[in-house]
Each structure stands twice: as structure tokens, then as C-alpha cells.
Image (cartoon, rainbow, N blue to C red; front, side, top):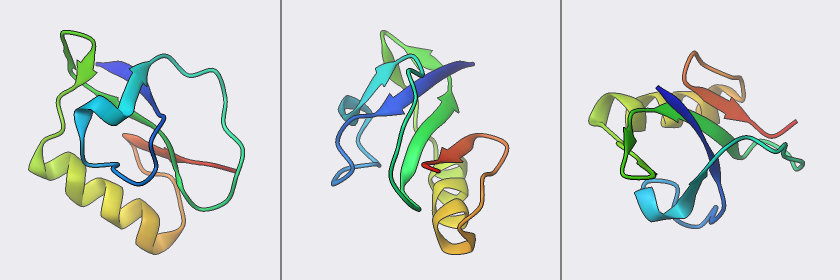
Length: 70
């Protein structure tokens, strides 16, 4: 697993919206980073990960693979 930072909040389900690394995020109740399989520098976004992303956003709390902006 690798950590990817979301760079384009308008498309969190698109692998190209992420970059490798976790330099830190600011904001409120948006996805900051995800932990996913590294697929040639982009995250492998599975259906389970998409569900976890929705869970994090809906509950406004981090999950095991999704970190929200503080």
C-alpha cells in the first residue's frame, strides 16, 4: 500500500486526481489522502475503497484507508 494525496477534489474517484505522498492538507471534511495499491504511480481505486471514501465523507471521520482534511 502507498499513500496518495488528492490534488483534484472535484474528481476523487479518478486515479489521475492523486499524487504519491502525503505532504499535509488543510481544509474541512474533504478527502486528503488515501492508502491504496500503487499502480504505476496512481492509486488503484477499488469499489471497496470508493465505499470507504463515501463512508468517511458521510461520517466526517477518518477510516483505515481514508484521511480527511483537518
